Image (tube, rainbow, N blue to C red; front, side):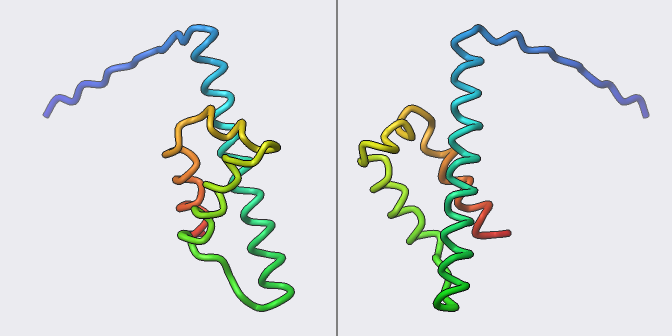
Length: 88
C-alpha cells in the first residue's frame, strides 16, 4: 500500500499575521482570566463557575470599555478557550 503525503506552507499577509496574533492573545487572556476567577471562587467558597456562567461574563466583558477589544477577534476562538478550560 502506497501512502502519499502533502506538505503545505502558508504565507499570511501582514494583516492576517496581526489578526492571528490578536486571536491567540485574546484566547490566552480569556483562558487565564477565567482560570484565575475559578481558582479564587473555589478557594473562597468551594464553588466553581460553569461554562455557561463564564460565557455570560465574557459577553458582558465585550461590552465593557476596558475589554471591548475582545470584540475584534472571532467569538468562536474565545468560546473554545472557555470550553477547553471547562474540560481541563
